[in-house]
View 1 (cartoon, helix red, strand yellow):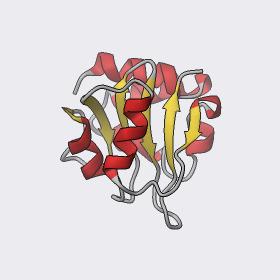
View 2 (cartoon, helix red, strand yellow):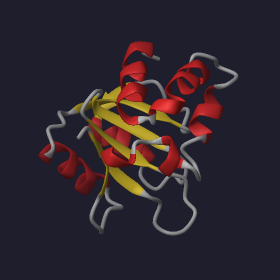
View 3 (cartoon, one colour):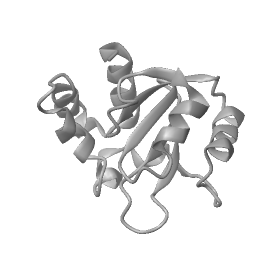
Length: 137
């Protein structure tokens, strides 16, 4: 895990009132799932809504999402914060991270440029899962 990148992501995309709490939770192995749980049903009050841009449908293919991210400045690698422990806290090729996160049904943030561009997928409540480009205004 790269705590510095996580701090940048949280300070950029999370609401100001929750940033310190989420940073605290992310620093603890026991509380890390608490931070990720905030991205389940209540992502709309956890993430800065002015940063959230709907990804147009169809949006369930990792290749299509990668294309949207690259059109917004993403490179070929990323950092992942995810409920999926296989990819959480890792730097990965963008397409690999998306293949593991898209459609998983639980929250993930795939950061392409930590203080500018990321992909967010929320918890599956109804098909499809909420999917957003996170873009700093």
